[in-house]
Image 1 (cartoon, rainbow, N blue to C red):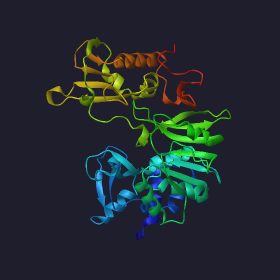
Image 2: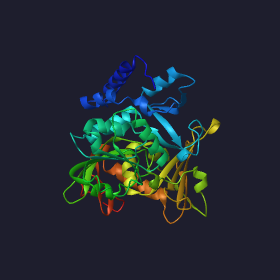
Image 3: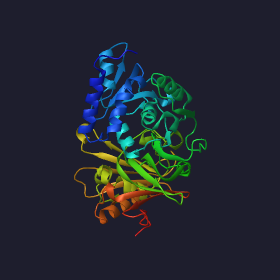
Image 4: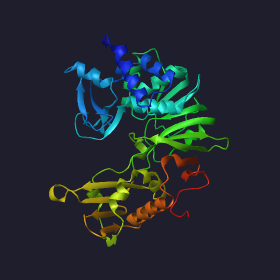
Length: 392
């Protein structure tokens, strides 16, 4: 693949844009972006998703080569697979593999902060671009990258032939141990997780760092930066937001809210405006911790009903579980609540939201995460102050 004469300029301009936005602050990653050109990891036909409000669009190098180059060296996520390969990238389907947006890639690499000759485990090879950037930083022999999809891993191996870098690629689940490379100094997770597999903590030496997109289901997701302690637990905080494609073994049940509705329901009312709960994203992490195992949907009306909306709270991992809906109608003093199942999901979410308000609306910087053999615990201000509905 021949590169245009202005490739160094394109990469340089991308670096300047990332630096201006606060993502790129370290010289080693600027050097890596030049040394490992992104276009080597982007297929000729893919779907570009801008990092902003603009709609996505198809890129095809055979049809419009200039547009392809422009998309590759802009802050776009490049979708390379939908529905695990069952759907064409240009069709309506769930994205399941990509070359992540440069801003997202750099943000995670800077949070990871690998040092010279660190051993790095990557979960989610994707196109191989991030594995190559890591290999440039710490040496290819120090990087092990795991991908669950053999076709995706195979393509990443082909992409890497365009470089002089040869990180070790493994096809596997990613949540089990890889003793051959352990202990690792850094674990870079490029897939969303609702639960951080403890195997990653076990494979990391004390003092090591794990960086992962923490995505329990309610809300967008958060960048978790964890330090592994001498007792085998990992503790850290959330430096920012993060949204990734989910680890295949932890994907939530998908589908429109109507497909989750079943069985008899009880009806009540609430004085709490459901829009405040659904749209106050500063509360999402606290609610996700106090009300585990849920997902949220919000549907707005159209035409004369454009000011109306319905907020749905659904169980994350089961379609025939508990569900709740709340209808917002402008001018109403109270709003109709419908709930089904063993859990009163709206009651739980409302209680969690009001408790978060009672704490003074704490921001993301006050929350943290602990991962131990018993699972994960979100805490406020200090690890011993666990966030849970039962906590007072």
